[in-house]
Image 1 (cartoon, each protein chain N blue to C red):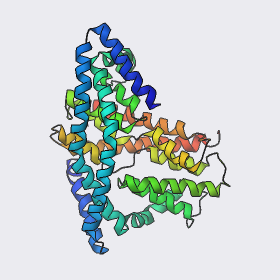
Image 2: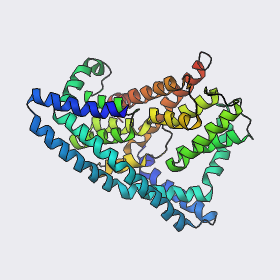
Image 3: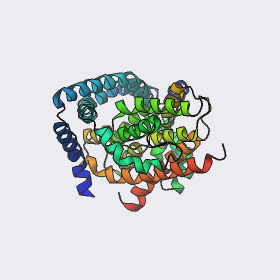
Length: 173
Length: 191
């Protein structure tokens, strides 16, 4: 397990560069072009991050978050989920920047290696912004009736959320 | 939807802060939240660019196409009605591989063109075909092998082992994917 987590990132980079060499790609030019597009997308999320982190910090400081977590605690206690993670579970399918902001808030308050930090990490890494994806893919092709897509996708999200809690609370990840 | 979530959170915070007597702290939180957002973006900037740069190398070298060849037999089972040599199936597989490799920039256009081609195969109807539902559900389940943004965020906040969550993320992804695929197959006859 430790081997996987320590070596996956370097292996990934190694394979890409070796493959680029093998195919005689102009790897440095490709890299800089790609990095430039990363710069653009990173800059593009700044406005929404500012808006959302402001809202989330206000939500925590005003005591609203505590009200929500206390209201949800009968349900979350049942599945051994720390109730601070409820906002993340609710926002994850809706907005990528909002969930990034919530994860940052959790890391800041509890640390990334705490049980809450680990659950938040796994939840964030194993689920996607479902509503956005469905809207982009079907919207651009002019599909109006999405049939069972949302239902199946949300069932998958719920599985990811529950599993991330169980893996940390019962299996020691 | 974001209008209501964002606006609602701020209005609720302001109203509740009056009752909890935390108006000042809430106002201060607004300022620090906005500042923190810029810090976060700046600290993630380098690593995001590094990854989009690395994945562009793979894209330009044709890595997506090669891995697609390996994966297409397995993926054929999820799309039984699509011909394996069809244009639509090619886009579907390439979209999924781009997702696996974390090439968000490449995956979205490939996915959109795949849905467009599937629509043509479906006679241009405005209702989603079974194949489209499967493709979009696969896209809403995170398939990314290395969650790069998350790992750099963990590193930023001083994690002793930023990559330690990767195995758990894979287990979680596989479970979510299994549920998603099963639900699509079960529900496609009912809708």
